[in-house]
Length: 152
Image 1 (tube, rainbow, N blue to C red):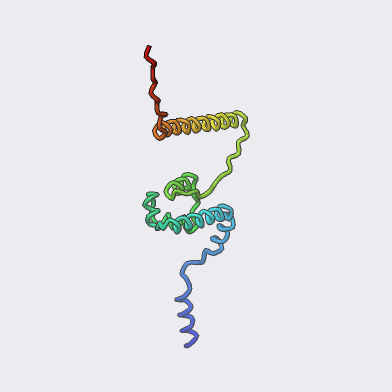
Image 2: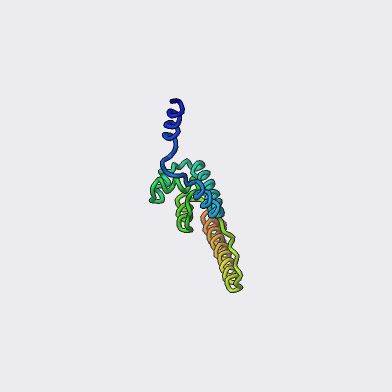
């Protein structure tokens, strides 16, 4: 009778459906590369949320997504698109990932150089204008001395 009782208890504990642990393990192995990246992003997002004292629910509202989606993101289980990452960065006002910008086209380098020089010139002109306005407002003009004419 003890054996029958044991069998009943064992049957009650065993799941009715077969386990899918093998399929899950194979899936994780096949998707390991993006899962690691997703987990790294999740760590970064969690740190930012903690630093800025933002709840997952508040983040979900900022992103206009469900709290379950944010839970997947912060749990490292979401295959994020560049659009989603950009929305996260905008909502959190922080950089989540950075991509080195390598440019090989010489024309593009020249445009960057010209724009950089023009930006520096504009900045210098602004400083010069601000200094001129400051000096006109705060520096007293030199006093004029009376001119005496000799009578003839």
